[in-house]
Length: 142
Length: 91
Image 1 (cartoon, each protein chain N blue to C red):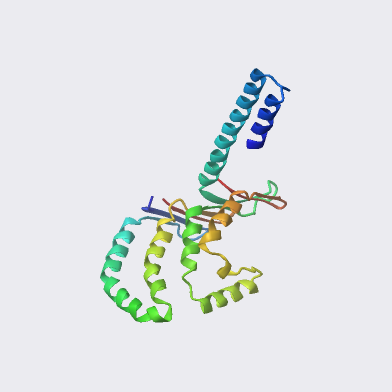
Image 2 (tube, rainbow over the protein chains, first blue to last red):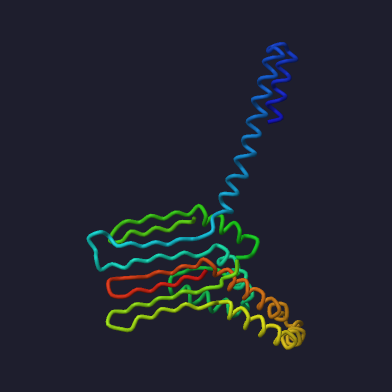
């Protein structure tokens, strides 16, 4: 934005634009800057207001025997759980990871630290999964 | 907000229905009393284990466990099919 202001002032100095035009252009730039600053806190506050991870499974209309699942997990539970998991001794973590690998989940618990925890939860906030087949599966944050 | 109420309902076909309403405040009181009673012992054990790297983890375990229990507020688990229903709500 400073470069744009400089260009305007250079154009004014070179006489390419009048003072009124320069004033209007500078006012337009400052209003754009204030608009960007307002939108950034709104998007971050939208992400902070996301409180739950939802998993919803509904059977297809022609599948009366299907299961319905509705799970709502608070985001703060995930944060607290990961912080608690960081206290697990390293040798026990290895056993847990081996057990998860047997189930097909390749997860390295030692890589999940408090520093990247917020990045993980922020990434989850953007997660939306919609699958339709015999059952309708929705995973999202709200 | 800390969770204070737990509601659980289990319906199985041809079996007794289970409906449970449990005030979690009782758990909180028992947990706090237990932690106060065990704190001197935990402190001594953590000091003994400190050179081995487990002392800090032992001291942090209690508060983090409480934070996990405190974060349960708002948890909903609902699973149902044609014959069975399970509902858990922690508020």
